[in-house]
Structure formats: C-alpha cells, structure tokens
Length: 355
Image (spheres, rainbow, N blue to C red):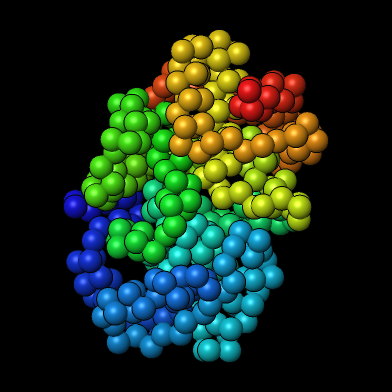
C-alpha cells in the first residue's frame, strides 16, 4: 500500500512501516520512549507491537483504564506523574498504541509535557485509523464535554497496520465504519455508494478502504489545518451525535454509546435538517436514513432523552454567538458548514431519526 505524505508527517501502511519506525527512533537521539496504551490494548495489541519494535531506545509502558470515561485530565496527570518518575525529559517521545481515546489523550499529553515533546500514533481501532489519529487534533473531555480541552499537535509518524483490527469485536468495526460513510457523504459520492451496500463490501481489502478514507481526510485537513473553515465538514453528524454521546456518557442509567454509533445517529438527524432547509432532496435523505438504520439499527431515545441531549448542544465547538451551527449536506458527496440551526429543527431531526 502506498504511503501518504502530509505536510507534517508520513502515514505508513503495513508491517514494513516498523522498520521506518525503528530507524526514526534510533536516529533522533531520544532519551526515553513511553508507550501509552489502555487495559484492552495492553492484552490484545501490545505484544504484537513490541514484537515489531526494532529500537535501542529504553522504553516504559504506561497503561491506563480503557473507555471514554477515562479520557480526562486526572488520567493525564497520572500519566505525566509516571513519566516524571520514570525519568521523562524534553527528549522523550510518546508512542500511542490504542484507539481514539488513547491517540487523542496521548497526543495531548505530548503537547503539554515539558511544553511539548514528540509523539507517534499507532492506531489499533478502525475509527482511530480512519479518523481519530489523523489530522493533529488532540484532547480530553471535561464533565462529559467532548474534547473541550486540547491542542492541535502533529505526530512525527502514523502507522496503520490492519492486523490490529483482528482483535476488535464487530461493534467496534461498525463504529469506525460510520466515519468512513461520513467521508463518502461529505466528499466522495461514489465511495459512499460503495460503502452503503455493506453486504457486498470486500472486508478482506479493508486496507484499501482505510487508505481512501485517510486520503480524503488528509486532503481536507491540508486545506485548513486549524479548522477555521473547510475542515469543519469533517464534523458532519458530530453536532447532534456528540450531544447524544455526552448525555449517554454522563447518565449512569444508559449504556455508553461508541463514538461512531453516535455519529451515525447524528448523520441521520443532520441529513434531515439538510433536507428541511432545502439543501438535500427527500430521496437523498431517505437513502442516508435507510443505510444508517440497516447497518446500525436505531438508538431508542425517549422525549426526555432528546430534551436532555439538547442541553449538550451549547458545548459544540462550532457554535459562536450563542447559536447552533451545523455541517449539512447540499448533496451526497458535498458538505457545507457554519449553517445556523434552531433547537426545534434538531428535535425534529432526532424525531425523524426515530420514525
């Protein structure tokens, strides 16, 4: 698979990438390597990674508890304290081995430790491979508000190795697939048309699909690295999806939604809003809704759930002036951003998702 070169780093594919990783580590004078992972990846992914790590740089493994609920400042403080106790300094480097939680959090820790050290991402989930580990966004949650503390920080390298996906359950694969569908909906109608017929998708060639999704995201990010404009289209489905995801995360009576599941829900609601505002045709909206419902089913939301989820909309990072602003579709394969939307229309979008 052909590697992808961005303005700041290389995205390398396959097992041969580890040779480049070893050379990079050995030739850049790092004093210490910290490998950040979580309790799931420690068991299922780390042995494989370590068997492919050709370096003489001394390393320490730091394990944190798995789950979005642990992507918080307290966890970061614990990791930083461990790094200090283990001799971390400004010539240290962090390698993240994990899904989106670990790549988000590890990149953030690297950006603030000693005012910034290098880091490398080794994503192990489909969602992290196609989205979370690409583009330089890092961050942690605060009181359920997604990624409200963070920084833009680019890794020195990103390695995508589909062998890690063998450790995932089907639910996690489907969660990452939602972000791939999103890439098609906002940028590439033919890609979406292929992905939506999931029964005929060749998952034996998943690396090719991942490569295409990463290429789409990199194309968008290159135009707008700090998300002042067009990069916002990558947030399609996220305004509504993040609100529901945060509500579920902070409600002990609810089973936590995976990020991709919440985004899938959000894409249907925001496609409905796109249709209601005259951007998307009824036929296109129903196509998206049927696709999402077929692949993901329906998250059951009561009127109370919808009302409580709306309270989280005010924390969306695309908002300004006290107004909700969404990414919408003007057709399948093309997105527009900074569109002001009322709460009432969001409610209708969620009700349409359910019906």
